[in-house]
Length: 196
Image (cartoon, rainbow, N blue to C red):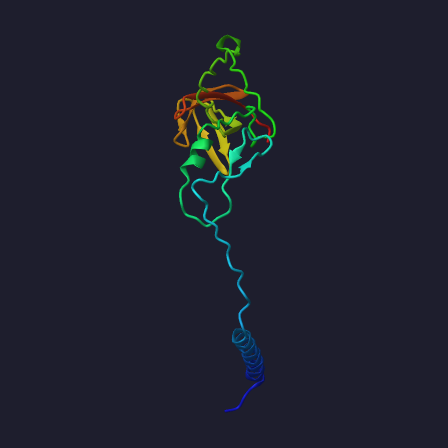
């Protein structure tokens, strides 16, 4: 098996880790083989039932309280519990969790509020404008007047009373304008004669 450049780096790293692990294990074993440090003997004192406990007074904490000495005795001392039953906490009324007191806002009286009148609902939107352009007319004797209307690239020829583009009805033709009705929206509009 041939070891490449990458595999060679991995083998070197593995060897360094193995040497480090061996040194750590050797150190741990050498520290376990020595003698353990000496343990100080615990001083256990059992209080005598007839002996009163020392009294300790803490400034600012009320009357002096009998405090038990530091012992490992698991016995429950009822006389110490009874002496602490009469203690009452009398604080200054200050909240120690808030740096300053917040003022509570006063409720606003109903008569002082500004009366808001509800706005009426919006009406229907205005109908769209008629996109036709009136750019000319033709009239021959004995024939009704005809007009030329354009919408984009479409050109329509119509007489009074005819419907153009299946939507717009020609109501009245004047020499300078034409009156048209949008049949779908019931919208009347006068379109002037345009020069272009």
